[in-house]
Image 1 (tube, rainbow, N blue to C red):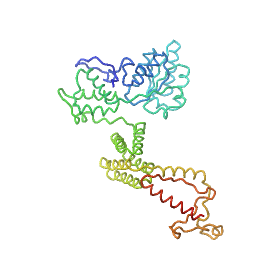
Image 2 (cartoon, rainbow, N blue to C red):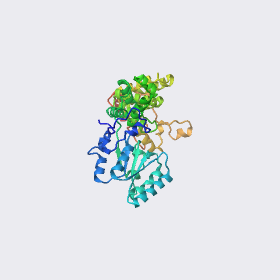
Image 3 (tube, helix red, strand yellow):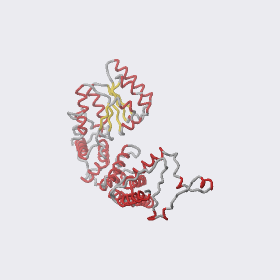
Image 4 (spheres, rainbow, N blue to C red):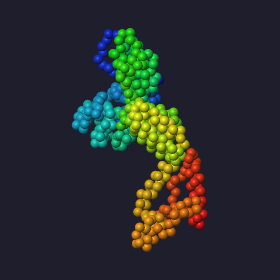
Length: 438
């Protein structure tokens, strides 16, 4: 994959530029942003907009360091719009009003404004609504940037007036290309071993700006004729953690991937995502709780031991702490992914819960109610109840649902794992019930 930035001219060794390396490597044209070919290539969505001479309101959704701000600036330049940038972190309604008023004055002079709103998801509902009139009447062309899922973070009214374009995180090849461009600009190779270089790419976690920042730190910190190995690199950089916000999309994406990998019986993928979350600083006890949930939801009675193992792993981590306790959670993760799967108990629970809500006022049949008083006995409480342990096969075959409901069926075990045995038992009891009820 080609790199994100345009090819720079080498700088002199004694140059002392004030701008960060990532800023000096920003591309000059949209065509240079080749890390997002699906948007900026010859057939890309943004290329088509520019060629058509009509730039719509868009939301750029993607991980940090994938070029959202750069693309917005280049769109303004390519369409002749005035570029205005604000950040939702530092702006309020009063700031927006000033920006909108200035945009109206420009429009009166024949110049339209491209308003780039960084972190647009941080605006509240009222602030997001304030964009609607100026977007509708063409006062501004809105380009919003967000790292969070717009479906959850942006108002439906604003989403309906914009087009969401997704940017991709940079892969290892793309990040490596950025390092090569940085070396060209700096006039010298990064003073790191091949292993340390690979570690830098892993630390950047798909963020182009991050990998250039790491490179700049290495250039600043190394002595003449010094080459850093992996340990030396980590010591200098103080181990930059992968990009991961435990309260935002990164958290939910990885826990979803872990859960689906366990459900899909792929222990290798499940272990990978578990370790990704460990490495990113996720609370291991949170992961332990999620594993317990997976044991109930996706394995259930196909392997009744799964829940015990998940609980034991959570308790083991609670007892041992980190990092020793993480192995117990990894062991449980592998076991759950390898276990036979059934959501029959989960499905039965949801169905029974719906029935309980819809029929919550119905009384159980009188024959299974105790009669602690003479009045209750005279009313028929307990009449006809048959004690199952006194019956052949310890099974009376009586009905226990409220009489208004009749018999219901919620639990339908699968033909996998231990539930195969439960299926045999239920079929056996169903046959006995039919026989004894005549």
